[in-house]
Length: 229
Image (tube, rainbow, N blue to C red; front, side, top):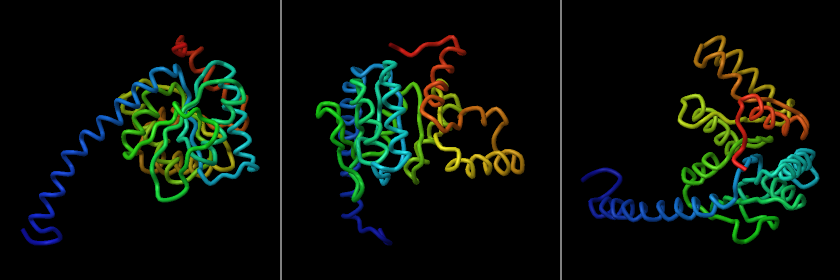
């Protein structure tokens, strides 16, 4: 074999890939066993870099508090920033929350508002994303970076392609999201026709905690559905 890998190196890579299957299975099993005990949840996303005195941190905390008061569990990535805000809001409301932590070279550590038995550590992003979607009955997305966008578009794509049942997706912060939403409408939809007009209805944009909670409540009320309480 020529090129980047020698035969010995390639055989070692293949052997490691085989063992990785068991690690993936273990993460799935741990995730399923822990998450199934939480009940109906809303996943809250946003930047790990958001400071505690940032208005979006405070808003995320308020949204989580109000959702927890209504009986929803809160799912976050378990780290700092908006993730911490979500877990903190649930904690202050006496609600349930879980942190789906991922090992990263920077930014990520367990925040102090999650019970130790409600933290799940992942090596694989794709396994972690399974948990975010499978056990969530709503997504609340605050300003963030590439990771936040990844989770947002993953959820929209799964709903659009009918791989999961539709659930409410709420973007919080008109000022932050308006440029992206305008580009989706004016370029992706109108100029390129790469999505359908109805796809725009897969998400809502709000500015307050009450509006975010109302979107989720109204979705289940208008769909004649109810969260799995």
